[in-house]
Image: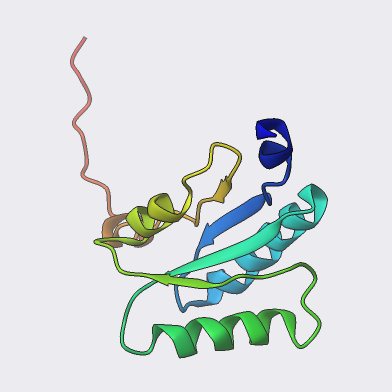
Length: 120
């Protein structure tokens, strides 16, 4: 019976999203992966008073009324978005999509400290 239970698990592709422009592209990439794996797409957003509404609008605006895969959005209270995603991704079979790194202001403005050349 344990084997039947193991095979009955639903595969999940979990993606942390913020309310920003990059979230749409990230959701599309994660949905494509979920479609390939016959998995449920689980977009995760960090809790805020309006997070449920924001996440619902983001999913609806991204996919329209015809979602390409089964979608199960979650809002999670955690210290950070990576912590929220980690709290959801509890099964070893879960696939986690990481969002793009947020570059520092220094990196975005290409302001890097000048390092003097070493004398040789």
